[in-house]
Image (cartoon, rainbow, N blue to C red; front, top):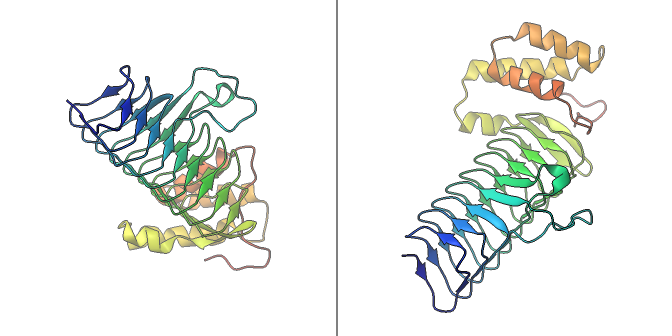
Length: 267
């Protein structure tokens, strides 16, 4: 049986694994599901059709699963899914999906959401994402694995943040950020590759060297972006890092691409 503090309010319809720990003054709604080994420290509200994975930790005053901050939302049946081993720190807010955005907000496994982070409706976060204090995502944002979003940054709705990318603190990101890219500023521009992150995750030196070559080609001044993209694709067909960027750009969303500032030299 779950360890539930006497002051917590857990609806009888909620589904909690046997070893879940619910701290003082938590409120858990009737459609919430919480996986094995998860810990709710205190003063947390979990509501809506929300599923929390196993071995998660949620800290005081987080608000998880309340209706989206979207005027188009009209009470439709939508949900929120959070993976395993994800840490949700104080004052984090996460909203479920909307009918117009696919109906589900997803947060992957092994993510770290620091104090005051906000994930709006219909966002899709892959595994190992880090959102630093007060980083915010508008609706429909997609974030790739191992991406890091710096403190106080804000990401515009429908923007895609590529895998292993880095968004600097206090940046305003209104365009898609390529995988392994680094975005800085307000409005954010592409400021090179996240070389530190690539090295930390053990990517081979030769792969990184080719990625830097491809980056310089891709954001050179000659020709069009699509022409340069074809050249990069042909020159580095077996480099998985380069090919992930090629695929990312070819799958372009309605947002423009985050590019270097005019006249800057690519990393």
